[in-house]
Every structure is written in C-alpha cells, then in structure tokens.
Image (tube, rainbow, N blue to C red; front, side, top):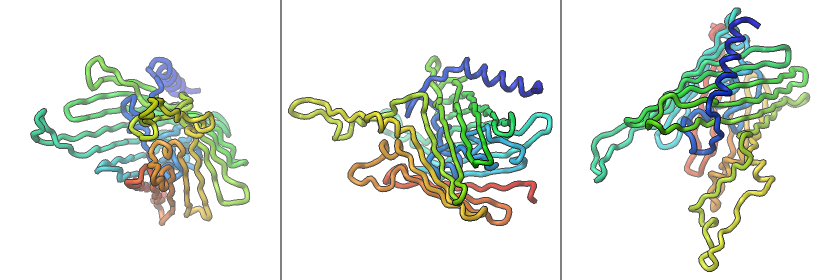
Length: 347
C-alpha cells in the first residue's frame, strides 16, 4: 500500500468518526439535493444508487468503489427537467494515473429558479435566485479480483437569497463483484459530513447521511439483470403520517385518532427499491423500476396512477451512449432524465 493510499484511507476514516453523521430523513437536514438521482440509468431503475459494475461512470458518483482503470477518459453529462422550473445536472470525467489510481471528478448543480422578493406588506421589491452546487472527487481501488473500495470527497455550496452555506462530506463504499456469476453487491455510507459555514450563525444543520446496500445479478440464460436496493438502513421506521390527510383526522364524535402506522412488513418495504434491465443487445436496453416508499408518500388515494414507478431506455449511436428515463413522483408530472456518455479515447 503506497503512501497516497494510506493517506486517503486515514482521511476517510477520520471524517467518518469526527463528523456529525446523524441520521436525518425528509427535510430534517440540509443539502438534500445530494440525494437526487444523478443519471437516467439509475433513475430508471428506481433510485440514486445501483450496484452494477460495468464501467458506467455515471454510477460511480454514488458508488465510488466501482471506479476502475477501464473508465479512463470517459465523460458523462446529465440533465434533469425537474418540477416548477427547477433543473439540475451533473458532469463527470474519469482519469487513471498509474502511480495514484483511478479518479472521477464531478460537478453537481441545482437551480431553483427566480423568485419575487416582497416586503412584509406584500409589495414587490425585486427578484432573487437560489441554487446549490457540489464539486466531487472520487477514488476507487481494487483490493483483489473480487473486492474493491472507494471514496468521494464533496465540497458543497448553497445560496438562498441573501443566505449562504458551505459544507464538506465524504462517501465510503465497498463492492464485491463476481464476474463468473455476474453478481455485484455494494455497501455505501453516503454524505458523512458537516456544515463549515451555517446559513444562520450558531444554527448547525445535519447533512442527509444514509447507509445503502445494493445487489444486482445478470441471469445466465436470459438477457436480463435485476437489481435490489436497500435504502436508509440507519433508520428502520420511515413511516410518514400526513397530519392534513382526512384519513388521519380525529373522529369528530369520539376524538379518537386513527392508527395508520405501517405494520412490520410495510416498514421493511419502505427501504426496498427494485429494478430490472432487459439487454437484448450490447447497444440497446430497456429498464424498469419501482420505489415503494416514494409511492406511499407521494400517492393520491383517489387516483394513484403510476407514482413510484420509473422506466427508461439506453442505446448507443456511434461513439456515444444515450440514456433517457422518466420517474413518476406525483400525478402532476414526471421529470425527464437525459444522460450522454462517451470515451474520449475512442476519438
């Protein structure tokens, strides 16, 4: 183990034990944009992390342990047309150095658009904007023919009108890959970090720390790969009860509050995301995904539709790989995900 590797491992574990890695769910922390799906492929399979080791640079943003020399000189661009004029995207580039290992540099941004600024009387006094960004450096290394490790370091900035905040975070990941069985499994500790500068002095907010485990396997006699993702393993009960939902209101006569808490099985399912990838040729694939928790939290009981489901396609034209997907978050619409990747060595 060379000096650089020892230094990186020491840095990662120092961060792990010194940062405030308190588990926060849904709006209890800050920098939630870090959990947005970073590629059309991952989104189509239902989540923002997929345990697939096939040299896809876009998957390394959330799983640095799959960074490998085979990704050298690959570049990826992703753009998402989100809700209410919000848009976000990623850009990634990979480079391998014989002395130091394989790296992926990424930039993530989200633009919340322009807002009208009013005073306490409701009078308009101009406009303001809001945006957040993250610069990431990822590193991966194979320990042997089946095991690999990796880490991301993230430098985060957030600007909300006159408020600003800066933070730092790391991801730590490990992957087991068995090419003979076409099986891959990964464990990822995401967003271990803290704010360096708070929006308000003295008010420290936690980052969206999360533990995830994913596994994927390609079938031996069929051109199909299935994936299973377990999310938020640091917190078992992810149940959310909407106090504004009519079904959760107290009985007007008895005052009794209905018990709509999930049973054990449903609590387990809130951690599960499943996906499938049909790959008839190396240049074309069709993907489907299902996120149970997303469906339960975002559904409208009168018309549930396809909330929680996602789908996408991938195809290659000449030297470029194109991926497109749609993920149903709510009945109001589905975001469009577009990702383009290429290997600069092929030019």
